[in-house]
Length: 252
Image (cartoon, rainbow, N blue to C red; front, side, top):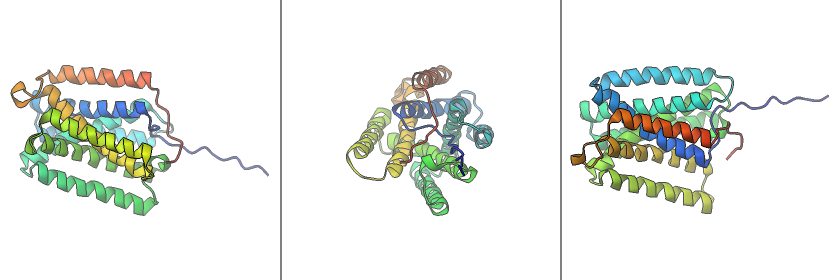
C-alpha cells in the first residue's frame, strides 16, 4: 500500500544572495519610513509605534493564516517589523530615557530569551523547519526583537560610540563579511550564522537610513525622508523582480 506524503509547507524564503539584498534594503527602509512618520509627520514615537504595531500584527496574522508562501506578504511583514522596531527603540531610548546602551542590552536579552525558548520548545531555530504556526510565532517574535535591537545598537554605535553613520556602517558591514567568511570556510552551525547575519543587517540598515535622512551637520545627507523611503521601496521591488523568491525547502 502506497503512502502519499504531504509536502511540507514553509512560508519563509530560501536564504540566497537576493534574500540578503532585499533584507538590507528593507531594514534601511524601516529606518527612513519610521522616521518619516514619527518625525517628518510629527506624530511622535509612541503613536507611530502603535500605528506600525497594528500593521505588524495584521501582517503576521495574515502570514500565519496564509496557505502558501507569498513574497509580497513576507516582505511586507518584514518592513512592518523594521518600522515598529525603529519607533519603539527610539521611544524607549529617547522618550523614556533608557539610553542606547541600556536599550541595546535589554533588547539583546529579549532576543536571546526568544531564541532560547524557541530552541527548548521545538528543538531547533532553523528557518527551514518553520512548518507549524507555533514555529511561525516564535520566528516573528524573534525577528521583532532583532529589528528593535538593531535600531538601538545602530544608534549606540554611530552616536554614543562616536563612529558616525558611515563608520558604523563599516563596522557592521565588516562583521557581516566575517560571518560570511565563517559560513564559507568553517563548520560553525549554519543556523546560528544565519541568525547572526540576520541580526547584523538591521543595525547596518539603521545607520544607512540615518545617513540618508539625518542633517548634514550630524553627518547625514539630509535627504527627504519620503523620497528616500520611496526610492528604497523601489529598490526592494526591483530586487524581488530580479531575484525571484521561493519558499525555503533545504535544511541547514
